[in-house]
Image (cartoon, rainbow, N blue to C red; front, side, top):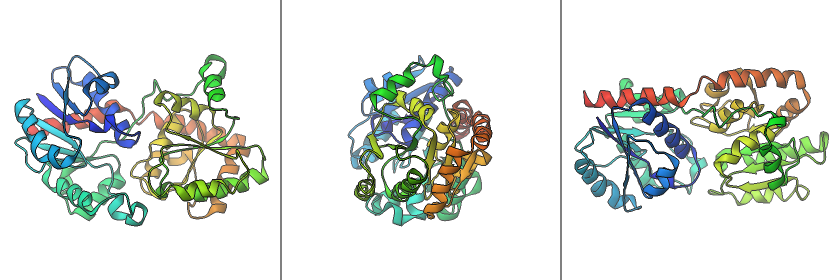
Length: 371
């Protein structure tokens, strides 16, 4: 069989969709050696450096604007390359000669529109909704997102399949300081004072960073005036107020690293004393899973799909209560026995999220499309 995969997110900004595609395509290539994977991206040579295998064929898709690419170019490529099914991300072609699968990681832009004002156009929302109805199958990353899709888009139960996000255990793992010189190298390069409070994710309203910064300021006053909050992530939209809040604390208390290379992320998790992730809502919550896989204790909010990911390994806090956030962070930094217990629980729980299982479920969907 020949399965086409829209992978243009691999050439874009670091985000959940990019992580998902990397993990999925790598494992599909290992799992399905008798099938051919046609991976479509804007920059095939760059994509080949990220994911490559004998049964992967890299194809260029163009132009970058979806107005021409989706209705004209993608259907033509499906026909020319003789694919048996095509897997799109969020928006699938309006016309297709083959069965379509669409990944919709969440529809938070529909269920929580106030958090996305200025980020999603009405046209994008309409196209995603239309794609969900057009596709043979919709795959999503959590039960929370599945329930939202069924309820808000009125889709048949059997049409929406959960293929969870996962983690690469060779990359995200607990490192022994005595056997990992890269820990000190990254610490020195970013000029970090460990242990620090870490936040990972794009700078946008949903991540609740303004409240986190204020809560961190209280922890810093109570515990250690040298404690740092390190925020790694790209500025996305409505981020200016986050910087303004950080400027109210002493110079150096909050560090913004911007986008960090993929290889540095596991090191940052290992160096951190705690991951603080008090998001207002998530369709999955990759940083929580990645932190647990590295043995990093987590403070997070029980919103959206986050409880599915963290379970009893996480210190849960109320994201709109700054005292709750600060108490949770302080609890992790001071309760060594409880933190050790949750660290062990997180390492165990993270083992249940593997890209091979995600790829296996996705391959079942592809094959069911062609039956």
